[in-house]
Image: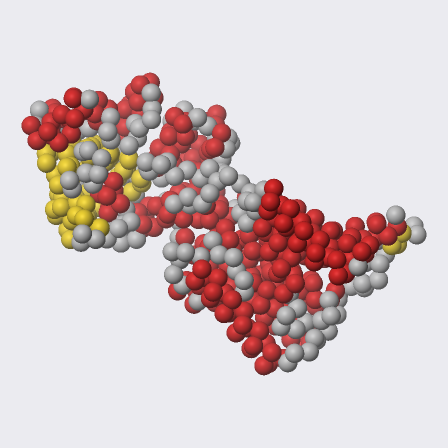
Length: 292
Length: 243
């Protein structure tokens, strides 16, 4: 029972990191109707900048800011100078370009930093705290949980309570109608990419201290899990990304804890298959298709 | 002097899709506070005129001027020129509330949040939609959704309003209310260009009627003049009468 409580608590923290990354995929999908296969590689670039900042200054908080800012800049650059030039009459060219970008970014990171995993220390202890005799979250897990929740709340406020959020939602659901109503849709798409890349960068930054360290491929598995979550939840559904992310995070942690790490990917794929068989559009898929 | 400049001036407009000429040398004007109806059989090119005015397609030749100046080359520039449009398919943001739908066009104007909300609420009240302000658009019946689309077009106080089949799918009571609203727009200095199949509605609200057939203007005049034009009877009204 104690172990279950521990696994559930750590699964929640892990799940929120997956949820954040899935949310970043949903933001881009809603803004540009692209599954951004380069999201993990782009986020990894931002985290390498954060790694450089923490190495030079010793401040994790400056590194966090650097990850967010670099994530935004990478998102801006990729959308403005690459994706915007790709034909949009079908999704395939965008996907191929994104996969090509993954290869380029992996190669550049490999050339600059080599293949080794560089360790990134967590800003808080990763030793679990105890409630009575029961080990629960570590201070770092708690930090991850609070930061992830804070970002989710901030995004919810942005999208639902601000003028920019209204414009982003309008441009995402009906770009042609939005243009007629005076919304600068290309600008909204760029902002969507910037937001999405920044959120993904934070997710990867939060992940790294719990993994072997940072290298070009550190976020690949996170992308696979988050992509699964986005499909499970419905690519259009932010709520689906969050609920699905937490569910998959808890599932991975429980399966790893009780059955071994080797079973976790099988469990995730089994869940994906089940959901796709029962509800192919995703559990939280909304009926509103993107209009003109 | 400004009253002599048409609100909308279309001159020699020709639009082609590949080998198909959708509009062929179309010319007409919409004056200040004037309501002009564009009628014609399906495929005559009525919506193509709207799309050309809204910069959704590039004409092969001809000019479009709004208030004497060339129409914007980008759709986004329409709101700055005080041009609004409704769509045949309504084009509402289904996942948003009614008031949010009205806030979208206001969001790009230089207004404070309170001013925007005030304008949206006043427009909803004017069209009898105040009680639905917070309702999701998707929950409303079709006539109310149609009014939301009209409210969204009116909320920015347009000087030129393009209405694409505003009476389509409405019952007689709703059409009467719509006619009253459209007639009231002239009093506020708003010019209206409308595309409509509902002939009685057109005859009731329009100051002038332009009839298109196969992309060409076949008649233009007051509702009475057009009603008795043999070319119109052959092209359009005759079909209605025969039906």
